[in-house]
Amino acid sequence: IDDLCNTEYNWGVPGGVPSNVAVAHKVGFNTTYYANNDVGIVFGTEDYVLAVMTESGNAQTAQQIIGEVSKMVYDYVESNYA
Image 1 (cartoon, rainbow, N blue to C red):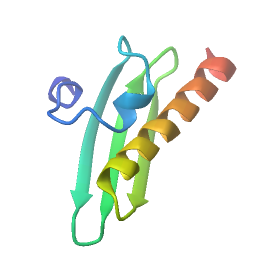
Image 2 (image 1 turned 120 degrees about the vertical axis):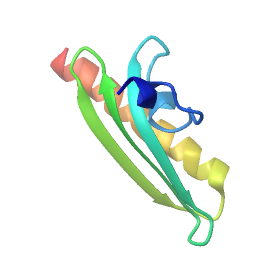
Image 3 (image 1 turned 30 degrees about the vertical axis):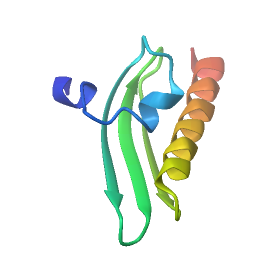
Image 4 (image 1 turned 90 degrees about the vertical axis):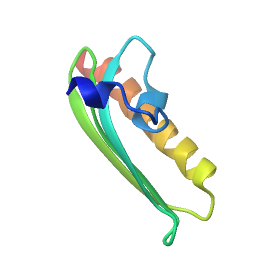
């Protein structure tokens, strides 16, 4: 888990949560199918798992979308389960 909390790629799920919240995650991408994905465990007030898969012609846009989805889920969990 510690290794997955300190990955080379910090876009995706970690991008949608505050920097003081630990996230163990693994990104994946496939340039042939324009797919960018991230799955992670968010160690917030209530821990949860989030997996987001995208298919887009633009990697930067896909990575931004994953971060936005992550923020929406984080905000929902914090406001309803904290």
